[in-house]
Length: 484
Image 1 (cartoon, rainbow, N blue to C red):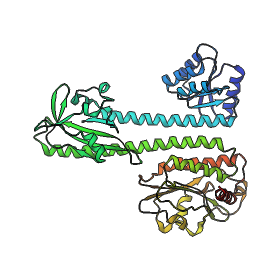
Image 2: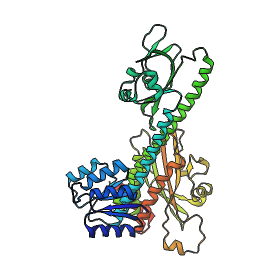
Image 3: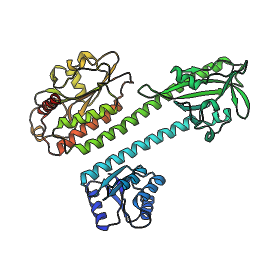
Image 4: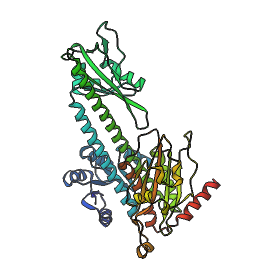
């Protein structure tokens, strides 16, 4: 249930929207008829989401009110409008809305837009909290820290680094790191290559040598030790660097203690960067999945078959997560067989697997593999000895293979009334596989959104009254592929 503030200056329309939302299971906290009233209600009623009509009577229209509500209160806003002209849409998009619905609309369109907007807001809020927590950690470390982008422009400098360099954050951010963090040799005063730039050039961790001095803008020169590490995107691309350094004025005579501290700092730095990369990848993936989900909601009522809908979803997901190969296998519960019904192949790779569409699997021949999936658990790098032959040749030394159960809580009448003993939970209807090369292995937490996307696509398709006919679906898909 989502608590919603409805802003609509037409009384009949407002009550009609309120009734629709309540039937969908949401709580309408208030009805507002103007922009000013909407801001007051959002301030005092604490809604989770605002449903805002763009055309409102008075000096403030819905776009202005929605923008102020989000900027001041960080409450997501979904716009309603009977006008979809380009000028109105362009104004609305400048406020970064969480959704845009053109009147008249159907209840299902309203429901899906609200769900996507609310989930997107939660994901962004988590990302902001993680970023704030990371910033607090970096600010309170006992070392100077400077972070740059790939061009060497400073994006972050903590208080200790401000003190040692003589640059405050407002002046340093956006400057080239050479201007702020300028190093010379103690022996002759010649310039030392900046460790940030050197680490990105060498794509490796770089340590400063003895006799390295930092020129401060307000306190002369300071003996320091520094460590620089390139920051890598999950796909391996360098996106910046992080420099950690300390004032060695009091530690020059105790080199052994300094070495131990550096080792601890390096380990912490590596863990910090690894955690940051992992969180960034998870949030990027979650947002990509939500975008795919929005696309599926538009296509579910026009797809001719369940397999075509799955194929569309798999193609979008494969591109979004930069996979080498993905596939979906659907089970036939009454014959204990399974069929690979759709796949995504990144053909820009130098090597890629041959198509596996139509491959059939006897579930009873691989009990260890399927008993694990039937309990709702995923396989991360499963052993080849227990896998179906159709999957075994995907296990190359450089590839990471993840296989997880495809679930839907839809249960057809025949299954519900059958007296035959069940070999697995009714909501396990197949499996999804992902193959990646040259990337970090997937975690169990990362597979969950993918399973939910594909399982949700099947659930929506079946709830709209389409029959389940997996075998004919994938044969139809094969015919389409052969004629294209």
